[in-house]
Image 1 (cartoon, rainbow, N blue to C red):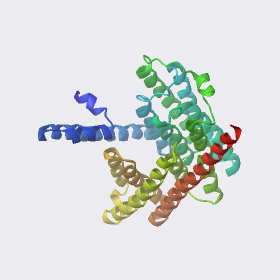
Image 2: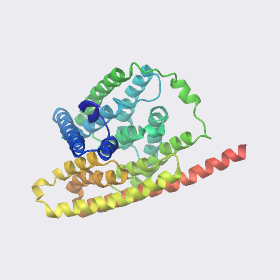
Image 3: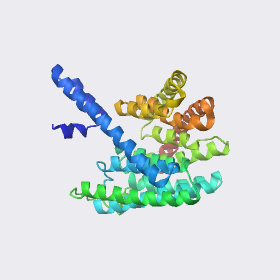
Image 4: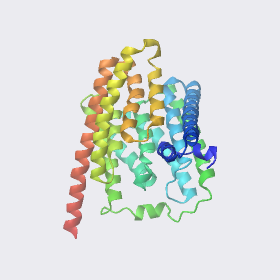
Length: 349
């Protein structure tokens, strides 16, 4: 494996190489490559988002995050559909993420929920045909981030420009990297494979219905940062209940641990470097191969931003409440939904 090829490995792959190292020299080399990968990735991400912030305004820095997320994922991941049609679908996904979150924010919670259901149906049914590719962690997360950091007026016009540029860039990279792959499945095949008896379809429907419901309930109860609950629910919803229970436990424990670590850093560090706690969290995520640790370090960035608006106590309370509510609601919702669908199909048979 070349140096460049090793740089392309994910955290789990790099750590597996470290474990399999037979000599100290080999282990040091793999550790060096791993450290270089994290450093290069962090530098690139920081520069990429900074450029978007400069060009579109600080309030649109989230556009840089979403575009970067899509670029990094879809340069390797595919949709399992004919490459040309997949490229068209990616452009459609960007249009949905650009328009629908903004429109939903203009509506009251219940009509907004209906619009979110329709939007997520497009993203999930056509972009997340294979649950184990975890494309929902890109598409639905991007949608929720844009929903949570909505803008209006001139800022929204700039957001339109930024998302359009991001769509073009992502589609070009995707097509270049996947154009030689052969896929027999087309868009109409995805529709034909929609089957209420399959675990995949039930999982898709849970994502489509549960995440908007979580947002709606959080907003009806006037809970700030409703997107946190939505993101927590999205990350916990998996095709099998055993896996969901594991995710829910790790998400709750990880967020509480992250809150405690962030609070300790908040009091130990001078106020002039509070903003860098989020970057520290990003580095931690870069070294984390397991979901539980990722939940810990993801908390840093979210709290670093929220603490500026709500203070430390408010941000910490919101983070814990929203995440616990999101994952517990998702677990109960999916348990009831899966059970109801199974009984319905059994009754029909």
